[in-house]
Image (cartoon, rainbow, N blue to C red; front, side):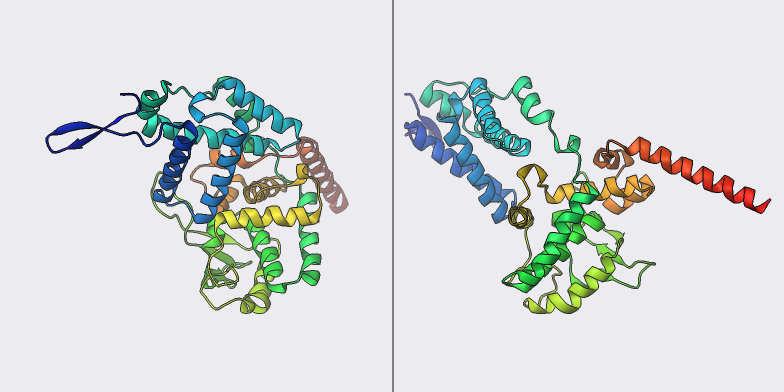
Length: 354
């Protein structure tokens, strides 16, 4: 019988009615099961809400059940997004969310789909549309925001503190995104910081104790100490003394208005909202992770040792750090000019002492 499943009971296996033979209703049930798997894996509620919306928009744009989608359908919706001027990262998100859902169907629902609808699942994302829309514009290949762009953004945020309806959240956002950039922290690491993790007397600049640094290969948290460079110590002192008391009392450093943690998805959405307020074109927007890559790149460009950047970012290998570094197009020329200027200064100094 088409669309039946087998239910094992005492005495053998007997046919069971299908969940639904209506393709749209069945797909809705599959989406619900997919979301339940996210919760089981421990994704935050904010992340789940964001991804549900993205998946629903993707399936609506495709216009047919996921098991009937072809490679041409994927090309069509990604091409439409490109025509609309949507960013490459947005197009990538559409492809990736569908690919994840399709993998779930293959792992959990393939037999039911074949029995009910006569379709054997084959993923429509192949080497051609994946490489064109996903691989070739990987975030690792996109240059991080320039120092000038970062400066413009922080200038906007400083001005906003004086005019925002709520001083506390505006000032907190400024301190938090300055910390992401100057300390090279991941969003999750910043969200887990507590007030005692700031050690202003440790080292020449003060240090942040990142107790829940990302580990590798399910090894658990990997703590590290990150110096407060580029005046970050002054920003965080001001934040602790003038801003943090305006939030409910809790150990968290960057708390929401209830005193609870800011989840990774909330931080990402907050940054997007701020850049919308800033009024810059979408091509000038960046993500929290891009601030981390900018930290690596800008420190490397000004001569900070690569191993020091590796330790600062908490990477296991220098190779991982190198994937974050995307020097500017004039990096070679700038390095050459610095070397020449240094050599001339040294020669001039020697001549003056002779």
